[in-house]
Amino acid sequence: MTTGLQIRAARASDGPSLAVLHAASFSDTWGAASFATLLDRPQVMGLKAMVNGGDIAGFILTQVIAEEAEILTICVDPALRRAGVGRLLLAEACRQLQARGAQSLFLEVSEDNEGARALYAQSGFVAVGRRKAYYRDDAAAQGARDALVMRRQLGV
Image 1 (spheres, one colour):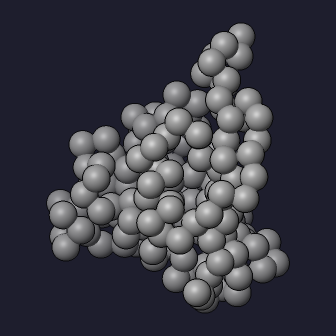
Image 2 (cartoon, one colour):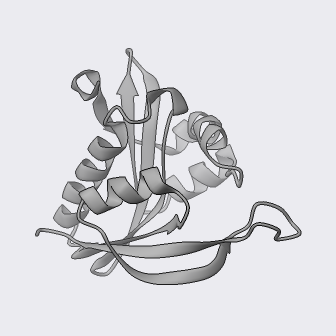
């Protein structure tokens, strides 16, 4: 599947498309304006995976501060999951972040998201901490889940 993908920079004008894809992937969604605002910041880097002549198959947003980077969000079209889109986005983000001087990359992932945790482990991330009740599925905080904090050294 990844042979037909093209990785391109995400721009503020991609906000509406990114918001739609984000809503298909997460219950706590970000709006188009949030994506546009983030992508206008110089420390934020966005990459999108394009397929079929322009459809967005997935995207990743990261930010770099000094020598550390963090993944703000990453998502893949549910119909295209497990086809290598996330792995390709993650690999390209790591390459570009390292070129920007980042030495390590951090992320938070829900402890019950086995697919994402497997992708990150296979990509060289290791768990370095936990955030209690980080993810909340509703306002009453019923079903709050912990997040694992993971880190990958870049350039290794």
